[in-house]
Image 1 (cartoon, one colour):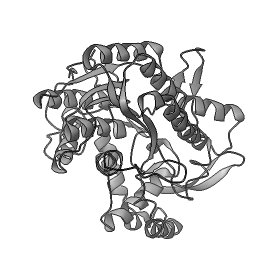
Image 2: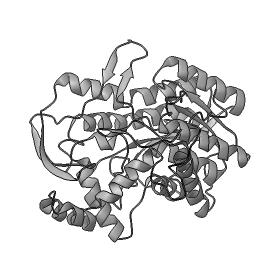
Image 3: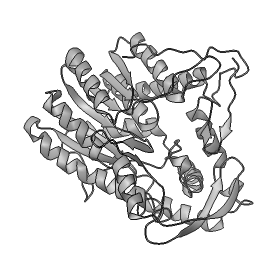
Length: 396
C-alpha cells in the first residue's frame, strides 16, 4: 500500500515502515559515530519502542555492544492498516541488531501487568541470567493497576487555579490563548498512579526477588522539569506531582538495591517533540521557540543525542555520577542554561500567529513530529508501494 500521513489532532493515525526504519538507521549511525562506550552489557528497556526508550536501547546495543530485551505495547499491522510507529521501529532495531550479531528480543504487552513482568523475568533468567541496566521509559496515559484492577487515567491540569497562557496549533501555526481548569485531588492521585514511580518500583522489586539484577547494576527513569514558562501546567501541575513521586522512588529503589551494590537514578531530559509532549498545551509553542534558540547556538539535541551523552558523559564515566541537589542527573543542562532561557522568554513575549514563522522553529517542530511516524525522511520514496505487514523478529 501507499502510506500517507493521516492526522487527528496531535496524533498521526498512520506510520511508514520504511521511514521508521530510516529513523532507526540514522540513530544507529549517530551512536556509532561517537565511538564505543564502556557501558552496560545486558540491558532491559521498559518502554523500548519510541523516544528516549528506543534511544536507550540503540545506545546500549550499538554504543556498548549490549544484549537487550525491550518491552513495549504496540499495535501490530493488519491488512490495509499500518502498525503503530513503535512496532516498525522495533522491527528495524531487531533487524539491525541481528546483522551486528547482537542479542535482542522483545516482548509486546502491557508493562504495568504482572503477566508481562513475569514473562520478561523468565526470559532474562533463561537467556541472560542477570541484567546490569534497567531503563524505565513508559509514557502511557492509562494504567490498569495489577493489584486492584482499577483503571487510572492521567490528566494534564494545573493545581489550585485556572491556568491561562499562549499555545500553538502546530499543524496550522495559529497562536491562541488557552485556559485549563484546575484539577481535583482525584486527578492528582490518578496521574501519580499512572506516571509516578510505583510501577518502576514493582519492576525492580520483582527483578531483585528473582535474582535477575547483577552486582553493581543501575536503573534509570526519565523525567522533565522545564522552565517557569511551563511550570503551572507541567512541573507544578498534575504531571509534576507524578514526577515528584518518580524522583522520590529512585531513593527507595537505591535502598532496596544495596544488597547488590546497585543504584537508581532519575535523568531529567530536554524538552523534545514526542507523542506525549505534543498533547500538552503550551509545550509545542515553547519547544518551537526553544529549538530556534538552541539551533542558533549550536546546542540542539534530539532523543538519540541526549541519551548518547547521558550514557557516555554521565552514567558510564569514571568516578561518581554528577547529580543536582535533589539527586537527579541533569542532561537538560543545555536547555536550562540562563542565556537559552532568557532568549526563549524574550521570544515568548513577542510570539503570535504572525511573528512565529520568524521567531520560532515551527517547521522543525512539524518535521520532528512527522519523523515520529516515519514521514519526512530523505531518501524514502513515499509514493512507492510498501508492505505494511512487517514482522518483528525476536518477538516473544
